[in-house]
Amino acid sequence: MSIAPIVQSVTVAVPPDRAFTLFTGSIGRWWKRGMTIGAKPHEEVVIEPHVGGRWFERDEDGAETEWGKVLAWEPPGRVLLGWQIDAAFKYDPDLITEVEVTFVPDGTGTRVTLTHSRLERFGDSAERIAAQLGGGWPGLLQLFAELTEKDA
Amino acid sequence: MTNRIAVALNALADPTRRTIFERVGAAPGAVGEIAAGLPVSRPAVSQHLKVLKEAGLVTDTPDGTRRVYRLDPRGLGALREWLDRFWGEQLGAFKDFADQQESSE
Image 1 (spheres, each protein chain N blue to C red):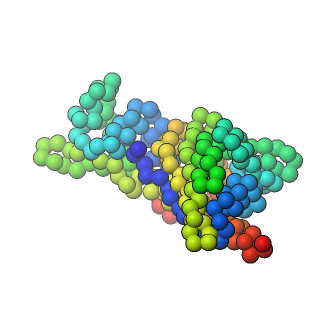
Image 2 (cartoon, rainbow over the protein chains, first blue to last red):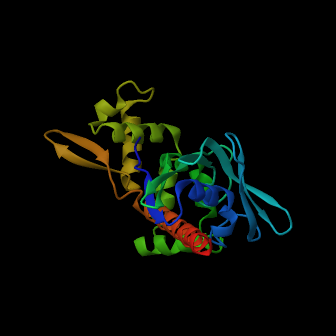
Image 3 (tube, chains in turn red, brown):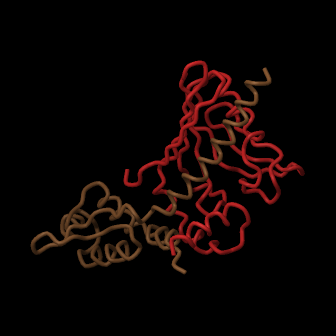
């Protein structure tokens, strides 16, 4: 694999089974508002709790926007999610990068480690991304733009 | 303004170029080594390497009479930096939420 994955960890106060349930089952409650891809802010984010399950957001009007799907469902230790959102924050059914989240006991709490891999696959949707860059998508794309400006 | 991420991703949009990029990632080498077994001519491989180099994805260093190509770790740095920040913020939000649940139990 040619591009190293992104790895991030945090330690939370709750035990692994609780952390797993909160992470997957309450994702819409903790996911940062505005950091979603639907036309409106999310009301809910759903990870269907089985292999092949959908991962999507739902807005206040009930409109659903796909994010990806469940590739492995191994509570309370691990979930592997297919992230089918390209670098311009659009759902792309032909793109699949992998987000693995592991839950390991750490004292009375849990070490939560997220690994986003297969990043080279972002290259697949590059033409569309290039067309969309600078298109004014608020929030995330703005962050994205700030970073690229810093690099210029 | 140079948009490094867009340039890098565009360079990788071509399937042949991506194969070449992955080969360079698997093992640094000279053009001939990279081209071996590929269904494209050596000059074409050279041209793809030039595009990858301009996109900041590979670098070449002289080794006697040949040039050795290897991945340029800076090429996807902007994308990586952005994703790092994105997931860092999300995990931070998850920690705040989970710890709040703990203290309210």
